[in-house]
Length: 497
Image (cartoon, rainbow, N blue to C red; front, side, top):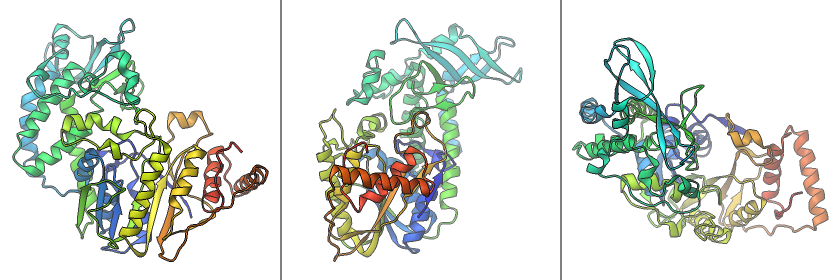
């Protein structure tokens, strides 16, 4: 058993963003340990499709499914083969159509230069107003970086309403997460963008939709969706690094905004995606995969006893409301909406209780048993800091026909870089825990022993002491160790012991 360290970076990882992305290198380790070349790997909560990427790189066949059309779009963008021909000609055509939105004049030589990005600032007196503060680029004539106060032309281009000639997304936000921006006047998707970037994105999408080459069109739509958040008002300006930062898993709009050039962002992203896809397919000998829009609690499109291995990370109960966050993608792409009635999450805003979540999770577990071949394995990745949620998780994974592969120390997926929240606290679990099971038709679920509060407290204390002896010193590490030890032995109590 081991800790798997990974970085939230790299050519493949950075090709497209998503709220929770499993690290390809870690998935590959699990696939190599549990399958043989040519085996079929299933991920019923495929998200961004990283399990498919890992299967391609290890020459396994794969089936990916998800309830979200956005996930299907991103997974296909990563996992479908493509042809690079004609990409450059289409990029040139697009540049000719929209480059005028991102030009300014050098104050020294009065020659035009392309804007790399602009800095926007929230109006402190009126939060519904965003002001153009600084224009940044490089003058080819002077051969130097330009940072200038906006002039009349800059202000005019920045307030461009070209988007009114094309499609732009008017869907209203819903749920709890978007409420943070209502005071800023952001109620609809298009309001998450400056007028200039909204115009640029509308033009860009219009040009992509005209492309006749379907492979290039799919590649460009993948690139288009990958820049939707980096080119929104969510892009935070960092004066120290001048990079783009997005607070993932939220709709946070900072007071100081980096308004990226949509055209440059798209061109750079397409080149990055091509590089990533070449890396994905460089060692590939077997390409046999399917990507399906499907509810994980009802895997009707997958035959019984057909899967060699399942690797998946279901929604972590109440941590992220995917349908709320995916609205931006869905609204722009217009390729369908998530069936929220079957979305397996805990959410007060949508009236989904932990019992609702657990019921769907239990149905998913039964489907895993049905589609797995005898004696084949399932690995579930889970994360939560709430003992109550771990208690429910314990119940749903304790089923007839799936024998847990118990380890004395936890298998953990650990990010090499902590979030700002993780630096501020050591009380929460900061890792993803991995639990594996094997299909065994003779296995009967356990009746976990229920201890008195005193007995339970004494046992928890002993487990924590053992954890420290084995080198698990932080509160978060001890929490992981304790959950792993309890999960398949004793009923987890919602207590602060």
